[in-house]
Length: 322
Image (cartoon, rainbow, N blue to C red; front, side, top):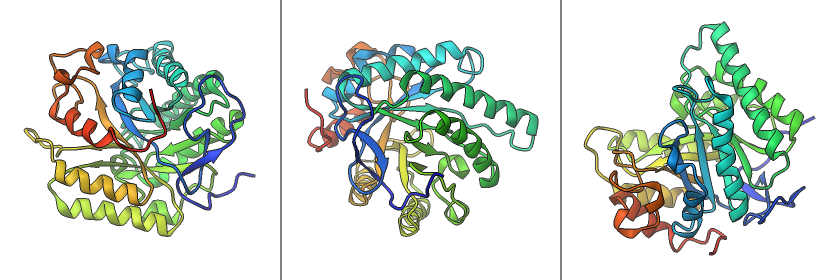
């Protein structure tokens, strides 16, 4: 029987296999200890040039990060339409992360909303099981791998937990230890009271929070509270996306707010990943729109967000070196 996690973060557990360079803290388990800090790629079916070994190397060596997230999208020739291509995108990142000795998160990057249509919900769940089964058939036992089961759910916790339970069952039939990050209500705003009062009692699970430096201080304060309440109740949290600006059009990088948020996470040993390593014309992109993936390590191509990210990360103790 799988046991409920007693602690909340990520620590070293000896790896069952070693595929290549061992990541900084070996295989991971949910417990008190080490931080994963890095960044996310954009949707896998778009900006595909960023799904490359060169970008993974830059994430480690230029940006001093120990984790990268592959955001595997479902639509527009994503895994709904072209499962082989989606798995290949994840594999490119996974293999490069293993070669470079860092962690990688395979994220099912979807905000499914048709929660009341059981037939569609079942199809979505089946597709997710198929996808993660394919991933684990490649990486079962890898010390580098984490799975993010549902990026930004738009359903009630009852429905979300139904999905997580079914997908986790399939995952645990293949790999009983891989760390799984579970999406939370309201587009992964964090472990709400419903989550805390009715968590999934499955080992090696963390709950997602997406945190952006919005101007609404009440919202920021509520997320501080959600994390502290989760810690109080032995619920693990992973910030699989943070953004250094508001989500409103025309927003600019807010270094002061972001610094405060990340300090809060560091003190509480909450792992986090920045959105995003790409050149999309949006404020959170690490490099400028006119630069390409091959230029990700060139200082003149860094956006304001990329400059702020590099300045913060370059001196962190993330267990990596090049």
